Image 1 (tube, rainbow, N blue to C red):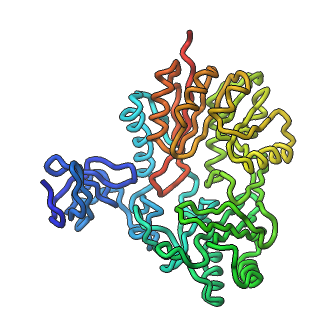
Image 2 (cartoon, rainbow, N blue to C red; image 1 turned 30 degrees about the vertical axis):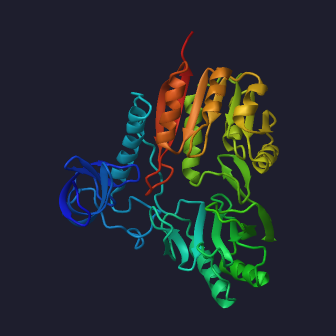
Image 3 (spheres, helix red, strand yellow; image 1 turned 45 degrees about the vertical axis):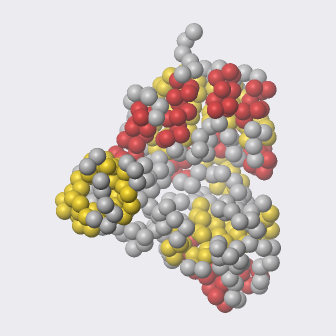
Length: 444
């Protein structure tokens, strides 16, 4: 039995889902943040559960050859990144293995995983940032907590966000604008959002407030506009609920327009504050190109894009098929998708509001179904609907290997098999990995 606060020598023999090192002591799995595969460490046990424990590094006895010094001074405190302390090849290998292990362990699927597609840039790649604001400042939460770590810069965010955070801090200090206090549900500003267009450079700033009241709005607009000439949109989102959900239902346009425009390949997209849009534009194009490569299009297919969002995948593949029908439960996103189709002159794409599991069956038959669900994966009802539609091919785009494996297990039990698995590093320096899977229907 392990004892809390005691120290042990531990060899790291595996890596956990969040990028932590894992070793075993007396049969216990011990999870240690910032430990790397192959290292021998002196660890202090900080928490003991029935079959596993958590520890922290006291001393690295034998370091991994992949270990490097983090370039970000916030790394060991902030919960945003997991891999600032290792070289990029180690991170890529970890992510490929993470996909492969999830498919085997959760899905029971022995599929070959293609080499991971690396990112062109591992810094400054994020086009969307979300900064919690509370009495400790503006920053990011520490890992597995709501303890805020104030940051004045972040290496993986777009560089424009640094000046915006500084400007909002200046505004709050000058006009005594209170940060949100989660315990008492008081204060004014809860979150700060930024969106940046890789193509046009346009910037949107979203300020989430507890109430509609926001003092000295004209000065806020002036200070923000003075901080960056590329700001074209400043929006207040009102969230008066006691919730961990960041954005509120009501929005007020404080200045400019309520969208920015970005491009993926030759296509233009209008993006609102709440729009789902991939956070790494360079990797997004690689992802969509991989989808195109995986499917041997004839040009005569009908394709359903379920969880279509603002229509990015639908419109990207539209020129390869006869017809695309996108389904999305968020009405505003469907409005954006319809508008994006018009902007790009695409006439063979149709978008429908509704839950995919309820709507898809009424749309007729499809040769191909694409699903790109949130991290929680697909509802089983939707998977059953896809099986009933019986497309020749299914393309599953996922940002969570665990729920991907769970859903593939269902589909492989219902007349489909995994044909190809391609991981893509959409989120450098974090433990997350994007993946695109092609499935084909078993011949009758």
